[in-house]
Image (cartoon, rainbow, N blue to C red; front, side, top):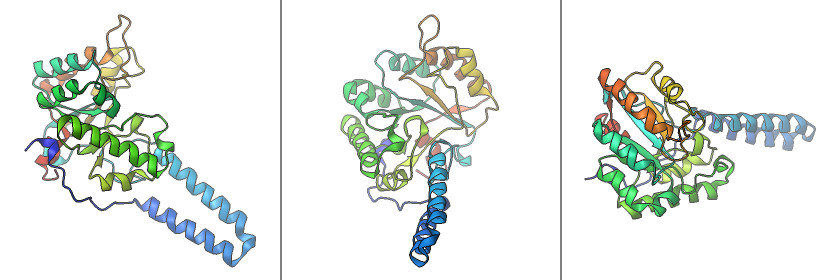
Length: 278
């Protein structure tokens, strides 16, 4: 059975974080205090506002687990492997070249795809999967306001992307990444209903803003070890001074370094399957 098609039909139970559980209790306590003694409203209001600021800050920290489960490394059972994750595509100019480089090095990657781009370039999405890579959910529209959305809008972005990926590839995504990694407390419940795992990264190259491939490569290789999840972009890629997408300059030396360190680039599904967590 294809990797991405093995998603269970039954929704998993949501796993709200300790912070969110404490936040609910705090709101209830603040309301009770005001009902008991109305003069306490300034204290109650200040406490609730401080709590909301903390939650907002947690959503702006992509690798945080303060809002719920968040994969930042591969399971130990994956062994000497790393996950190359490639965001924001598919892009008709960049993605085919990325696929060629990965094939030349025998590497596999997880592509976090934007739903509307998959609908525009379905043949590229199917080419990614045909080459043995994995497609994952990166929302339908990649709105940079995603972390400000209410529960219905968050659900719509995630579900529409799931439906798009399923319609184009016939398979169901297992993993989700928010645009720029930014999110809010509504996301975990939506991901639970869709049987999705939130994935961020161990380190990123900032290849959407850095035009120097050497700097991007240095960031990715710094303290590199097995289990790392690396982030690059085939969509919204920065360009070098010569106009080349940065990812195309970074991938060859990155893959060579991985091979030299005996680190296998695998899909997220492969890594989680090795740990019995797929």
